[in-house]
Length: 260
Image 1 (tube, helix red, strand yellow):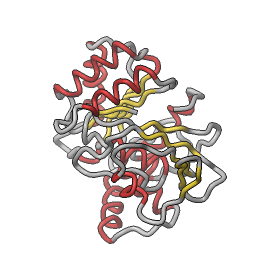
Image 2 (tube, rainbow, N blue to C red):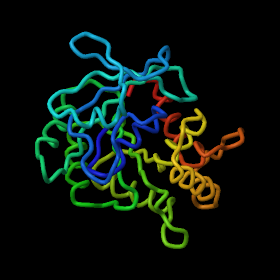
Image 3 (tube, one colour):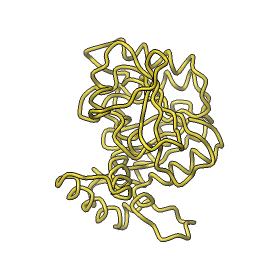
Image 4 (cartoon, rainbow, N blue to C red):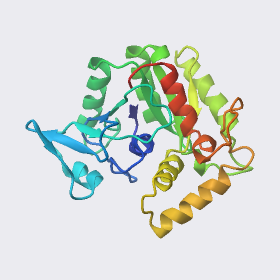
């Protein structure tokens, strides 16, 4: 998984897992690569350090964010409908940190050297076409086959009716990606934040008063025409996971029948 800073990559990790694993805020949050492996048999996240299993007594995202020199392998249950494969998420640093150019080197070395079958490239849907994204996309186009990539257009919850169009933004992004050399680019719009909060509600996790208000707003927004991202062929009653695009993205990944 790769992105420039503040595209919402760590929020997407949390949305896939269904709990807060990674720190999320409007700054560089991921300074080290993290490997997060699904463990369906466990009820809580855990890690390994010096071959010893460790649990997290404090907030896990804060604990991991404080680590600056080494990562620990993370194992966690993931709240997903599609469970025919065990997922492994690799969260890499944002590539355009002005404070630490080592982030870019680390991310690019992982993309070049690690074995993976799908690369999720996360873009901030409200700020498409930035020079930082274009530079990173050119690098990706050179080292990753197009058929391995899913482009995730995140933060579509920030679009405004009458000012922004999800459908038009997807079409424009596909055109630009094709111009950069990507063959038949696959783009999925999504609100990772909406999906994360809804999964927390489904699991009866405690939400703050602000998070409850935020989730109610997402439910109203993604039920509206132009924002509802439910797949047309869906025969089930849609929930916010369908409407915000997260379920479609998870199905898209699983249809490749690979680990990510």
